[in-house]
Length: 202
Image 1 (spheres, rainbow, N blue to C red):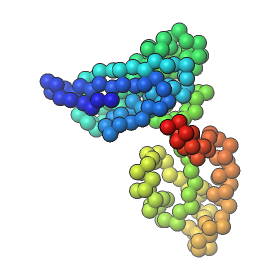
Image 2 (cartoon, helix red, strand yellow):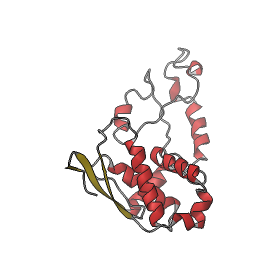
Image 3 (cartoon, rainbow, N blue to C red):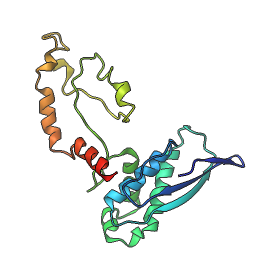
Image 4 (spheres, one colour):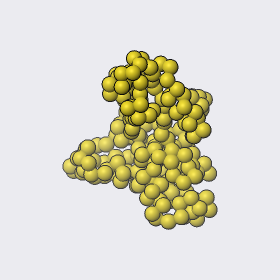
């Protein structure tokens, strides 16, 4: 991928979205969207093997809240779909039967959410924390590696023996986290397995 360059007051960028699951972002912050679209297409439609090179230009100010990232996702997704003749592909038309479904699928790519039969790219984990604000100390560390979408307690804090003062440090032996772990165990894929696959693929 090449970075943006100034041309007549506009930003011009050349992007290459490979048709495989090994797409990785570069140092450019916007490249995460290119990699996300390429990886998701390769995983959800592995028979789509054609990548694309796309030249985009625009003058939207960075971080202006004008949904430029959504526009980039839609542009790249549309380019990959067209390059692989998705409109005539049985698997695509079954999963993405109309324009609304296509819009919802592209939105799921941007947020990492699941869509229909396709799994998302969200990671959920459980961590015992004694901070008055959940993950108060751990958040700066995790945000180096993840975008934290939601942090919530394992159960209602009013029932927490440590929080309501009944038993100090009760979280060490509480079964609320183990019960939540059991519930999550049956959903999605284990994160460690996903990491091992990424390492093996590279």
